[in-house]
Length: 132
Image (cartoon, one colour):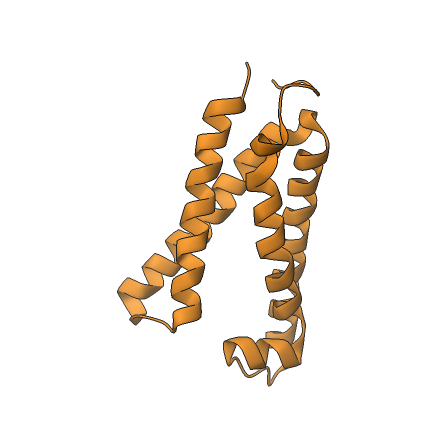
């Protein structure tokens, strides 16, 4: 387990970068006009709107845990583990979609690259800074 003085700023960078990437995406998912503009998704039903707002809150909840990990070292390990699972799960879902559905637009290609990089960087961070 980590203590308050054991994680330097650079050891928290993966959490901060993930928050900076996820918060704007969460806001886009939860805003009807933005999701249409950025992702070309038409929100025509209450159910679609409900699903997108649930995704927005999921992303924001993940960001809250990541923030706790960046702010308090006692939460760093769990936040880092969550970041690994979350980022690599998103990337796996996108990869599966590419196999089953075809290659998406450039924005989604960038997304999978960012998710893989942040997931792998988080693995590196937990191996480097996690003190048993």
